[in-house]
Image (cartoon, rainbow, N blue to C red; front, side, top):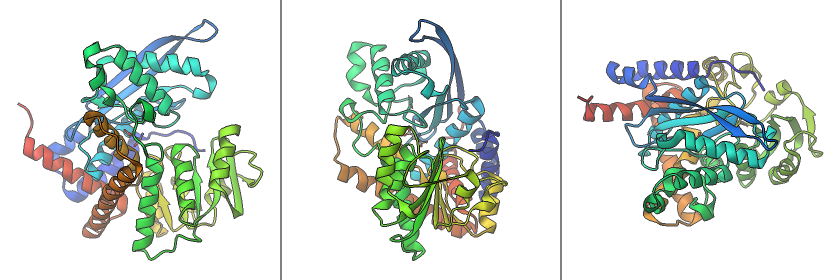
Length: 420
Ligand code: GLU
């Protein structure tokens, strides 16, 4: 997969284009063009062999005018301030598009988690949580899973946070983090939520376009939480998975890959490489796969000026955050490829995080039917708002999604004014 260029540059370009289009108030524009807080912590952790290693971690809080800061934590060697700043800003837009009473934040640790034992990851996570201290909190800033983090890591964050506050407050602070294991206060349906949201939107798009999903073909980049759930749920619609790429390589099968079988294989082999029922292909062949739908569900800057020309699909549904840069967007539009943009398409995760947060606050436990029905409703009404904005402004769907988000934020700033 491609190397790293500035991700925040993409946010700035997307933001400026939409702000110009909607004639965003110049004062609101100044505010939203900056992040509110940027926290960088360096901390030591004892490794299994007794050595001490230093880690650098980030939490960027972009905006909290709509509600508490909200967003995931990623563990990845390429995590840096530029990336976290971009991801935090996208979270603000995402919550605003869906109409959630939440702001935007993101964090991460610059490390390759595959190089550490489970005990080491636990100590790193706990020490990171301790270093963040009061910078997170159940009504202030609520982390969640992202790339290479999962419900176990959220459980360690919860336990560490609760251990550092007074005993009397503990029972009322379970919503300091979302994406927890169910038994530790997680929500049913959170695990599949991002993929489920992607699939709800693909289904809705197919209905609008009178496009038949049964028999349609799709391919997926990334087979972590988002990619694998999207692939497995689209299988339920009778669509055919023809190619998958992850950090270990890419595989293709004209007859179709079984998404569940591949999921099992990845769990025991650490990735798609060597999967016996698929043929190995290179990155360019993968992007050029003849199929109807492409779901990028890995890292940023994958569909760019260099690679967008390879795509032969009808629809790109962005499971990842920031997979397409501004040049890539231009090429998709020239080629007439439809787009479900990240801040709309992958918002199912934070939406069910919001449900988890609510359940914790109210000491409730919703069943899967309730979670899915509420998720469906919020995703589809956001889809309709974005679709209608694209028509109204005669613009592409990414800019339309920004227009929806920015208009909402602008309204709130106008109502509240600027202190003092
Ligand atoms: N990391 C996910 C995202 O990028 C989920 C964030 C959350 O649940 O707070 O949207």
